[in-house]
Length: 277
Image (cartoon, helix red, strand yellow):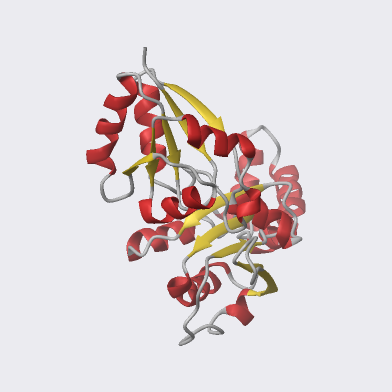
């Protein structure tokens, strides 16, 4: 019978967050697929877990994925882990999960800490609705497209960022999104854990030329309904009046309703209709 792929969450900083179930799973599987075997070895050594490791990451996933699948189909069980947090979240592990699902492999989730939800709770912002944006690509056209798509996002947004790219990302976010409130969260669950509540205008340029360390999560507030309303282009009074005319209203009534809808003067709309009739 085929084995099982276990998706195992690992600590994002504090080793005390590693669950008993996760430790037991790593002890019982036949082998572990790890993003960086050097990082995972340290985790295993800390908990005195001896297990065979196979490297599985962004640059070898197409080659290693089929190899891992073959072993699972042959009856071995595998634990998929990332360096920190839940695998497959902004992580190439999603490709292995998909490959296993497509081939009928049994998959089990062993949940653990994740920077995404931890940062949301830590930020103190409105998080009843949120959008996870992951890492912004360094590819300029794709980066610009991504930022354009989220300009009018109505949900709180969460980004991951590496320290050496934080300064440029904050500048790009400010240029694209304007002056929003932001929580810059660093080193979650670690000794130097911090949350800087500021604005994009204050953050843009603040870290230029500074050598930073640690991992960052950015939580950015959404635009309010009022802001979106104020940004919306004014309605075309002539188009509004013509719409009412097409519904069978008289010129006078169509002008009246269009004036109420757009804020334009009824007399001006009436004149426009007369000129365009």
